Image 1: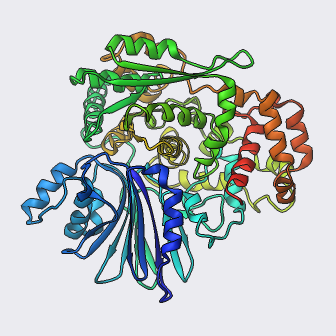
Image 2: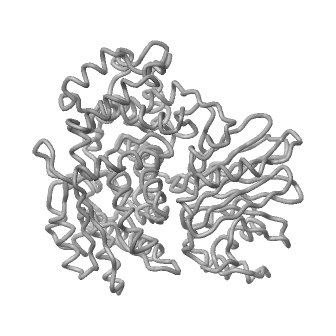
Image 3: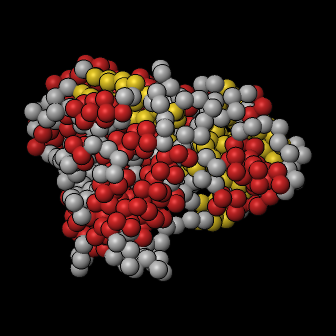
Length: 591
């Protein structure tokens, strides 16, 4: 888990060491254990390292394999690297390090870009071939590891965060109107390749991009999970599906224990993280360290779920750390949270993960986390209405979208509304793709491949890496997701959602954690904005920078300021926090 950056020139110029250094400095918190730069004329890579596997300097990056003529910059973890190494050694390859970075390079040499299909893990990497001058970029199946791009006919910049690209001083910083439409409508989800900044794009998940020396490039999408039963699965019972999911989840959790340092768990007290703890305990893991966080109440809404995380910690005898954040400390750390965002992310979870990661990083370098279970196994409230829907796009939009296109037109300033209803059109295109006929499966697919990537997964990466902490997500093991895609929708929707996963949980963890109302990461102060929080957002949205930008109509802002608690989106989000967060992020990045 690290940060990478690079510059590739197509105009005959040399890459700039100064630009690489500025990008690398911006990524320093992602990799506090080491730094390196490799310059090869028109191509330069920078890297910040967090030591998790092969703690020696033999695994330093960017890694140069002189024999193979390859230079690699890599962020992530390949969990099956020991097996791949043995396979490559049988083919005659010899290794000078003991980690996964060198395995990626030699796998690329052996199998070309198809090597990614063999990787179990999370990754973003860039490989430069000395002889051809070609550069290959790749991102894991769920975009767990980020990779941002800025390309012109003259050059390409790459980095693990969007702000690092802005540090080059050579990127179009104007706001993308289509991305703005998604941010305001698609619950702050801006699908790849877009970002809110017009001059920056992101490599889509499950994609390999091959870039020739002249800048021409070609993308290949190397993975997708087909929905629906596979041949022979028609007669499987609920117990059969439960047993298959349990076996696959055990494998996914075990894979993510691969490390040369201890691995802990972020324990929210929900079914998903509790199940990870239970499976690790079943597998014989002792001395497991777990972490939970809570906030002050606001407007009568409770700010923690300690009763459930305490129950699991006590049941399994973990070394549990319970972190309570008073309101004044929450306010103090909001600027740091916003600065850690690669893109503006509206979820209240961000500050929770930011502060949790700060405390966790004092004890440990790697944790497992429960993100992805709701999207993969059907845990959200908008999935049941999709069952049998005659208008799947309409049903999904009604449940998930923050506002309609016409309403957005009344809220955005002059010139900022996209010409068409871009968010609905995006959902229509995605729902029309082959491979998911059932309306529920269409919703699960878009949420797993799009929403999950650019909301929960990005949130966890940004907030943990702000403190040099690596987060691993077993519910996004691609083999587990492939299995879940074949589980009938009825098995996922039963029992109030995530039915098959609850069946699994009943085999492992105490029922009190399972048979309760679904929780979420509560930060009530950001939902019911008042007092100093209201002062902060009013100041940002009334600033000269905000007035000059003119993103929002003053009449809309005045309505939000008058009574923030009256303006809550269908997904329980504050409209005021949504618009304020965007402005605060833009100001933080100097846009």
